Image (cartoon, rainbow, N blue to C red; front, side, top):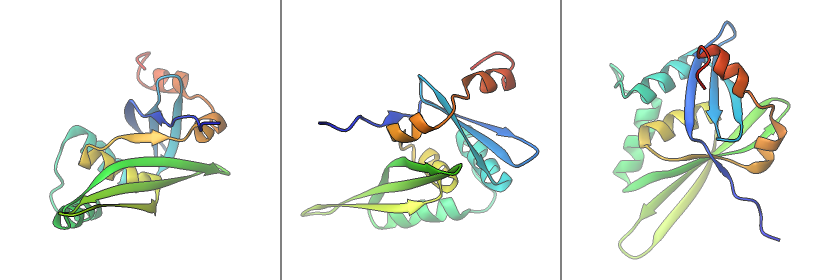
Length: 148
């Protein structure tokens, strides 16, 4: 039996909270929320807005290293959630003169999301992760003044 396809993240919304930053991942049929550190939340918000940092940040370094190796972020996959902790993998592809190489690297979802936005790469959520999470669509709509 074929494995269900991953859900594409259609929108990412960043909302500062008292505990840090809430990152809402809108999948279309459902919205998930991941809590991240305020500094990563600020970096993600700036990346979404297309605002370059005053000084290069870690995410910029990662992208520059990949580009220097003729590689690119292909996608970010939110792979698991355990006890409210999310797990992700960054999939990078390098096209060489003779063959392609693909690398999958474990990463924090917060860093992965910033990297994906900066690289203009898609973010997907595995079906079992979406199924395990509460739908936060209404909470996001309330925070945005009724606009989801």
